[in-house]
Amino acid sequence: MSNYIYGKNSVYEALKSGRVLELYVLNNYKELKSLNGKGVKITCLKRPELDKLANTVSHQGIVAKIKDYPLYEVSDLLKKENGLIVILDGIEDPHNLGAIMRTVDCVGADGIIYRKHHNVSLTPTVAKVSTGAIEHVKVAEVSNLVNTLNYLKKQGYWIVGTDIQADRYYNEMNYDMNIALVMGAEGKGMARLTKEACDFLVKMPLLGHVDSLNVSNAAAIMLYKILENRQSIHKCG
Image 1 (spheres, one colour):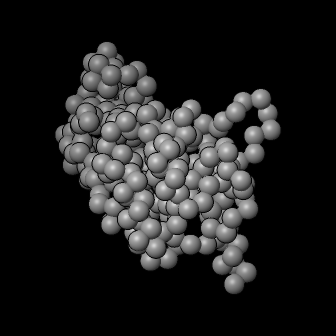
Image 2 (image 1 turned 60 degrees about the vertical axis):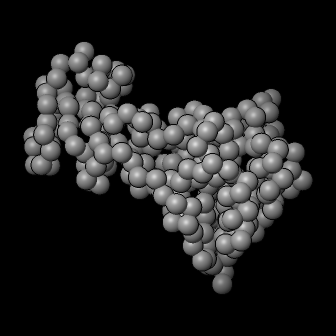
């Protein structure tokens, strides 16, 4: 990936994580004084220069050269109880990955797994949309998603996939177990072999005229339903 990220939230989270190597800001950047104490070299640029460096005009006046984001092993994401991992099967839009990453961080899930091929990776756009969550969410890339799902099963995880043809609704399940939640590609859903590897398939009601939800919206609904279900069970217990 490019070693540059942009946007205030993304850059400030990277600064807190110690990932920033160098900062580039507009000459009149309002918070330049506060940045001077970060111990990172700061270069002031004119807007056309910053636009070119960020490859966008939506940089909010700040760009950072950073160290590469670390990738984790699947085993680094595992938990013995109440594990929650998001599996992405062919997500190609960086905006969707960034939004999903933001929700994963918000609900305290343990990380994201996606295929090395036919899936967007950790790009500057993903970093920007995640509003800094990219600094906190563990990500693992795998070559074979089905093999990974089978490995997770052996580690005590149940595989829950979302599919419009499922027999049960998403709010009809008990999620108080280790879960790997599979979200399929935009417009295509899960690959056939991925779907066959799932232990459970659930769907969300679609009462309007369109036949699908945006994958990042669907992921947010599912993750918060899992969180709500677990909190309700533990509260009652």
